[in-house]
Every structure is written in C-alpha cells, then in structure tokens.
Length: 203
Image 1 (cartoon, rainbow, N blue to C red):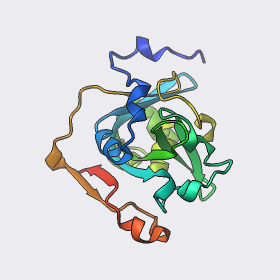
Image 2: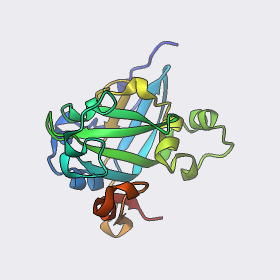
Image 3: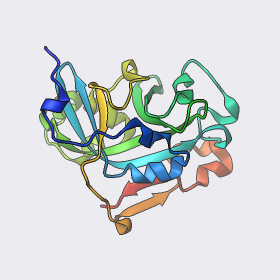
Image 4: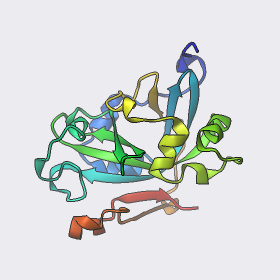
C-alpha cells in the first residue's frame, strides 16, 4: 500500500525535535501528557494523546537501562541526541516505546505508558483483537505499542518522521488532573524505585 503523507491528513503542529533536548527529563515527562503520538505503518495511521509517562534519568538512576554508564546493543539509542524513539523488548515479547531526551551522550528517556486513542480506532481494535475501543486497549506500555503497530524496527526513528511523530494540538491537562507517583516494575532499583517520576492523567 502506498504510504500516505501525514501532513495531508491532519492540521497539526508537529513538535520540533528541539523540544526533546530539555535537560530536565522529569519535567518533560510531565509536560508530555496531552501531547499526541501517531504512527503510520503500512500506510495506516493510528494515534492518540499521551496519558501516562515515566522518566528515566540516565547515569544516576538505578531504574535506568543506562545506570552507571552501562552501554549495550539494546540501550545504545538512549545515548543519541534527544528526539528519537528508543524501542526495546520487555520479557522478549512486549515492545516498549520511549522518547530519548537531552543532548547526545546523556541517556535520559521517557517511557510512554498509556495513551487515549483518538485516530485509527478500528485499526487498533484489529491489532489488539478487541471488540470495543476504549482507554483500556492502550493502558499499558506494551498495549500502546501493539495498538500503534510499534516494533523494534522503529528503534532510532526520529520523532518527526512520517512513520512516528509527536504533535502538540493545544490540549492542556489541568494541574489538578495530573498525578505522580513511583514508577512501576522497578523494585530492583532500591531507593530510586520510590522516586515520583511517573505521571498520569487522573480519571
């Protein structure tokens, strides 16, 4: 199928990659709530606005893949300049979408934990095997990637590409609707597991 140009489909403000060079990954993780993320896979577009994130702060964060300067084939993309996707497999089966942030060489990243579907809902239902579209089909990082058709093939993709991009559509989440707390599934990180670096939109 011929790939469509997303610019022809939406009136939007694609986020400039400069946005991801912010050196405060925690603040950026909070600010990403309400931003839209889209994919175009095999000419089909799907997406929605971000409702939950987690910040991972490079070298000193025991929950980070790059803690202590660890550098492997899997996490190499974390060291790229901010504005690229870091996609890895969890438990060898679930793809996880992260936005690389900060300048090159500083491995900060934001995990996209959930989105609210707004575009391509029928496509998401096909991909997830569900019958009814709701927030529950994308309320976990693995679910987000499954619904959006994201695999490790998109690792390293710029966040302003025609395959994967982020938009600012002017949606502002009120402060009283934003909650924060410890990240999920990082008990191995000791005291760092208690850091309130997970942000989500209260239902």
